[in-house]
Length: 199
Image (tube, rainbow, N blue to C red; front, side, top):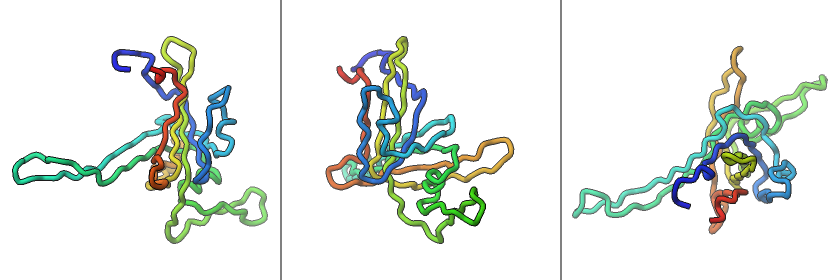
């Protein structure tokens, strides 16, 4: 609703990221939501850096010029880029494969704690579903609101350099971009457990 309303200000105080196979159903808010049981079919990616997640939506428009005007007379949508950028702090079988573009971690040698991950000679398509959840407590109350954002089909389209240093934790910086999921299907969906939308 238009107008000044502090109860509609959102701060992503704490959040989580999840991945799943393409086609996995979006989690349904449970009676005790937010709860990890809602995400039972998804894999939690664990800790991320304090920067959280950067949401990016960029639409590319092509101008239609005319002889009669120095300004465009029309715009044509030629592309839409929807992506999430984040940095993972945990190194494990799920996060490394997501960062590197698929493949698998395998046992290597006799010692029980020895594994290997082979980086492919060329990249392969590694499509996933990605889920984001964040919770905020409404100003002046103890009532929490929860937002979920689901990309049903997408892939990692960019990665940051991994810095190995003595004074900082190494991170896996990822940009995950949405891909078309078929005619008439949404590119992504917001789910909100937030009474402010009732108006």
